Image 1 (cartoon, rainbow, N blue to C red):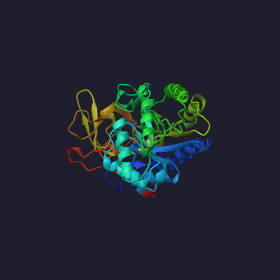
Image 2 (cartoon, protein in one colour):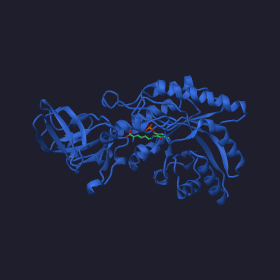
Image 3 (cartoon, protein in one colour):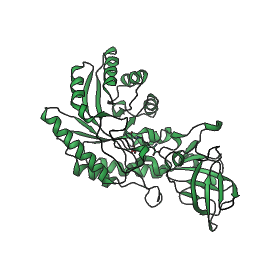
Image 4 (cartoon, helix red, strand yellow):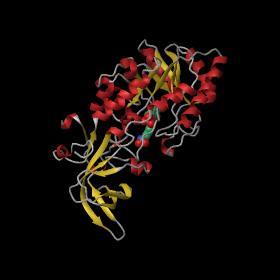
Length: 386
Ligand code: LLP
């Protein structure tokens, strides 16, 4: 064992693979449960897009949380994992008819609707089934977030949500339709956010919008503030569980909830990010003119975040205690961007060493691709190696 990794057992399976430390996942869920339970009107819908591995989903379902889905496939995965339909919300700017039908048949809790044409289609499809669909409107709050440009979503320039100026009109249209019922408002400003001030800005905006709606005697039963809480990619061991206490305290302090209003959260990364590592083997150590490369058997097809967002993931050599040396850790894919990290200090690497690419539980396995005809990486848990 190095840290909490069952290294001997790792030798029995083919690399690369994802390893999920389910003890850490369960501990994270316990902390979340304690924080959520301080408030009878707080609800967590785990953002399935972060990781839909069936074993991970089952553990999250067992902790009693709901699910935030963005496709028919995710809804199916959640139903298969045993999530109760009445805890499932369904978001996304482009829901296909079959996906809406699937959600209607399952009787999910709520659709997070992002446009008037979508609202009309949901009304029509629900009508055809003699059902009434609950709809929340995703409002684009035009609030920025201190994160990577590719993962901010709450600015007016982004494709997401309905403009604030159209909010009342949309609610009015919903009231005129027979097969939808206005259930609330939905927001999401971005991902990997560590500055609580960004969430404060969202709260302030929601307070303004609520005041505006109250003038028109519009009652909002549910407020959904999305997800976005970040994790500490630099210190996966020291900060293995995000500061949920601070996060929920921010909402408690700054959001003016009305009596009986329900507050919903859609955290993804903060739930699963730190429990996952991508385990890979060193194939070759190559000396170049000015540097050395550790060429590993995992690539950007297994974990695309460094290539796509210049994201940092800490790396550990699990099988070496030798003096540290500096490496560029790169994969085997035929792309220059197939680099995990540059000029990084690792215990001296030799062919066959096992490396753990840390904090890869969120947007790792789920974003893997088969480019170069590569096999998708498998996901193992602590129990698989018990
Ligand atoms: N709710 C909505 C409406 C979202 O769009 C997202 C993420 C979440 C919740 C969950 O956000 P989280 O709590 O995980 O930050 N692939 C990127 C992240 C994309 C996030 C997309 N939306 C990455 O690897 O960083």
